[in-house]
Length: 231
Ligand SMILES: *Cc1c(COP(=O)(O)O)cnc(C)c1O
Image (tube, rainbow, N blue to C red; front, side, top):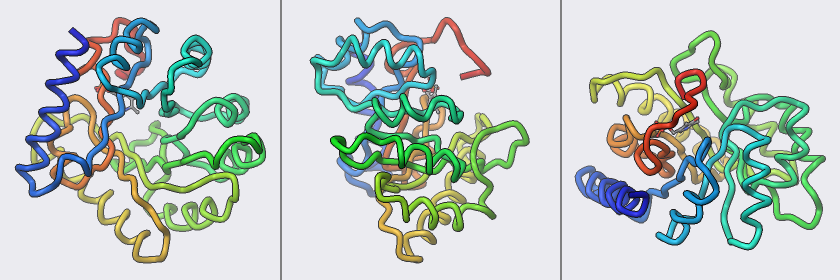
């Protein structure tokens, strides 16, 4: 099941890329494995998938430990808290959900010297929902400039998780706003290469608007049993 689903998702990415005049190679696939057992990650790895995204830290650390012998790339995509930053700095390759300078500063000092810089994306609250994680667009530029100064972090780009919409054109609007913000940061001199937009239900709209890293859970591993906050 998982290997067939991966093939279908990869084919969908390639078809959508061509439809919007993009190359399939310009879009990377992050398999969101939160709540999935280790065995499912191994199955996905054997089908050629090596980037995995996790939201819940304790669960993620247990999987990372269990899978030390595989060369996987781990992305933290859940909400950050100060008491989580050390384990994240020590165990992950990427953080996609950074939205506060104080967390960035902690990750920067806690990143072990023997590891390469931690790749980070800033999460933007593009739909400006009151309870949602992410920086507002009006505060993005100053946060990005400050994070870019931190030597043990490497600012790679932006991530967002907009309000769920069914209509394709409604889905595209927030992604377009994020792409414009991304291009403005690039124009201001930041060397960014990662625009992470699109999940199982809005992947096509995200690719249409320039996503370089789609985050797919349900589409690969099936419905999650323990959905928390709708995720
Ligand atoms: C769970 C989650 C996903 C994957 O969502 P699906 O709808 O299952 O593809 C993507 N991004 C984030 C930040 C998530 O928490």
